[in-house]
Amino acid sequence: MLTLIRCKGDDPAFIALTQALDRDLGARYGEKMGFFGRYNRSANIETALVARLDGEPAGCGCFKPFSDGTVEIKRVFVPAGLRGQGIARAILGELESWARELGNWEAVLETGELQHEAIRLYEAAGYARTPNYGPYANVKESICYRKML
Image (tube, rainbow, N blue to C red; front, side):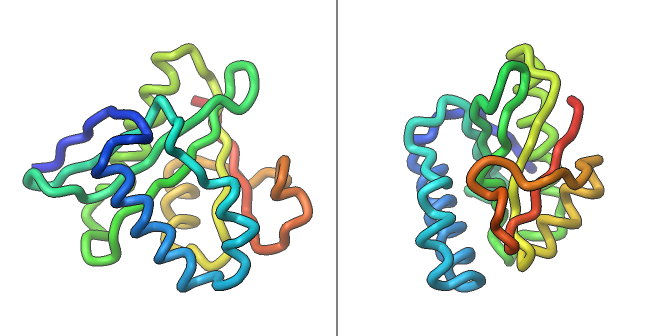
């Protein structure tokens, strides 16, 4: 059974999952993670989420304020052995619902060109590519998306 638990960025399961995400990204992007890593800090996040499958941590995600009415989705991750079960889609849907509950009407996010499963997830969930924003503006490895909630 899949359960989605709202928490903060200091939740131990959330921290463990984001550490696994960082290892995954490090294997994909190598030294480039020195750049990306500084934008992935989530310890002070108030709006984090942990997915549990049969009680065990199975994925995570969070969002933070981006601009008036817009949040930035961050740190969506499901370990490789658990992918393909709809966990990431459930996490993304819950993050979007939570953001709407807080009065937001739009979400943006950034992913990397080597994260094919993430690209498929976001496009299937209705996110549209948008020009790279903020620190990703001139980063060729970055792909940015936007969606009205």
